[in-house]
Image (cartoon, rainbow, N blue to C red; front, side, top):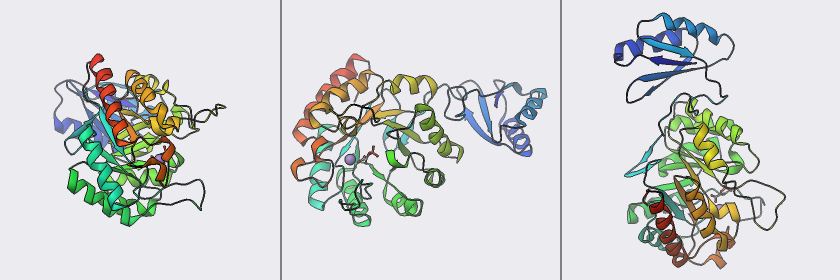
Length: 338
Ligand code: PEP
Ligand code: MN
């Protein structure tokens, strides 16, 4: 249920309403708008009609059901776009965010080289996987904690905040010690115990869409993090499975306007995994921004032919510079900046 407070309600009145909501067995989530505050009361759907009684309070304007199954992720609860802050970077505003770096952290030399180059090209967040979800158990699984330490070094050298994947609930604490943004990969989008654990950290979460999750299922996964008390969720469309084999996945750009309509959460596009081929990354990066995404996450490797993972879809640094130049032009046409 959404409890809309009257404009000018005091903090004490808000806290009183929250207490009453807790007393009825629901969890209040306060969303402070410019004019008025709204409280999302989430919990068991059965018996939620009881919350209607709050309408008799002086400070309550109205109490109405949230129609979407994802509640806190929905525009019904919050209409203003959510902005997620990571250091000096804001994700979800007029300024687009570009996250870039290698698929996997492979060595100190590889990471520091590429980190400096993506920064010079205009990236504001460094990506790099230390724990890698690989289809084959025989493939390179990542440098794990050594990789996290290298990411720390790259952050110190460049000043760029770092996004890196966490795959298991038991590893959330150690990854959160080193990461500025916790990435939940496509293969873990419905790992609900992992989602609950990353919610506890309160760190920004980059939630990739699963290759076979519907938009509704994806937003329900975001809901796990939001309902766990962490409002800092960034969605990322990275392609879904279809019958098409010319590309690795089918980048579902429909998801951008659909998510923008349904949710206030920021959304990025990953044209690297979405296509699987470096030649298509530029076109789909531009298309993603044109469709309304709040930014991009792009794989860049100094020597893609030698990459230990995802070489075929990785851009060389020079090529990345060209892609960013094109993105700047698309952004300008949309009154956004990079
Ligand atoms: C990645 O970012 O390298 C990755 C494994 O992404 P996804 O989870 O989208 O496949
Ligand atoms: Mn990858």
